[in-house]
Image 1 (tube, rainbow, N blue to C red):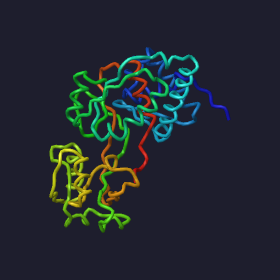
Image 2: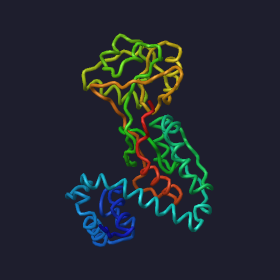
Image 3: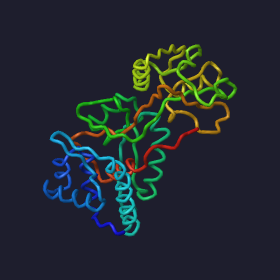
Image 4: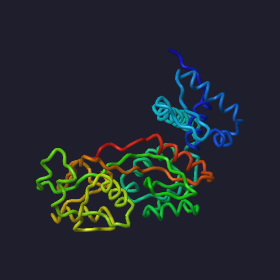
Length: 302
């Protein structure tokens, strides 16, 4: 079967998703709204199913649209990457990208994306502002960073948020702890344990406390720290067990620490892109932002 559509059809579809509507997408692509609508209809006809649900107030992807989105992003990235290789444009593109990023994403997620990006754009420099959630939001809003990687729930009226990674909270314990032999834990199992958690001012703690409160679960933390890496140091010394996002845990095979899933309820945080609503990215930052959207969730660390 041959499916016919144009590259601009894919760009039109993604622009509507990224910008939240036809009016902004048409302006960004320098198209009339009627021309943009024709592009979307042509793509839907080629795919054989509706990709967008339109109401008077918003536009959202259908189930087919959600499944098609990563394919569309990868297709555009692959074509552009190959063109860069053929023309040598990637070798010539220069500049600096400044990203405001929460520390766990800066340490575990961002390097993977930068490594992939540098294969095509080796002359681009990066400035990474590893900041707390609120500081990172302010940095993007003030224009100190072109965009940010932050937590859902960390909101700013001048910024938008687009999800990248779904990251569950897990338990970290020593390999000689009784929990290390358990396949799965419940939150009630932790009630009598010396718990290590991040401080109440942390965005991660706010997400955890809110979710557990709704489920009627109340935990008492013996130790509170400002940085997730500090909690792992306490775990290594056998002072307690830590509840933290999976992305912040050591990789499988760590000599001392293992992680375990905690269920009922499963508490998750969402990490995503924060951008200024009326901001305009540099060509290099736009390419890196698009790459981040194609990478998807990181593989489980244990």
